[in-house]
Image 1 (tube, rainbow, N blue to C red):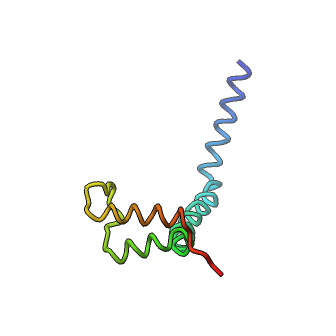
Image 2: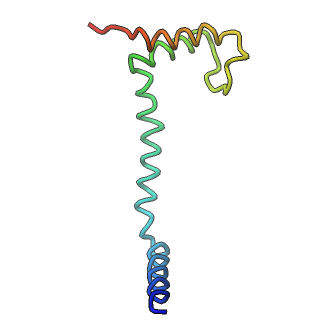
Image 3: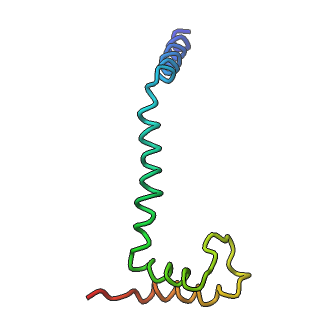
Length: 94
């Protein structure tokens, strides 16, 4: 019986912490992390040497990069070839 009372007290303490606003700083940090990922880190990926040729090709050809399946699209063949070649033969930076 003592263990049940201890668990109930611990649960009650946890609920009081949640309702007292103790979780708001963590929530703020999570939202800050998501914001940084979306608006800082994700755009930086476009400049990586393996990704830049792919993104340039997608923009030049007007491929809808948000489409889920490319296999039904005529432009998929050259896009896939370009993606594979840019990974297999990366650009050389002097």
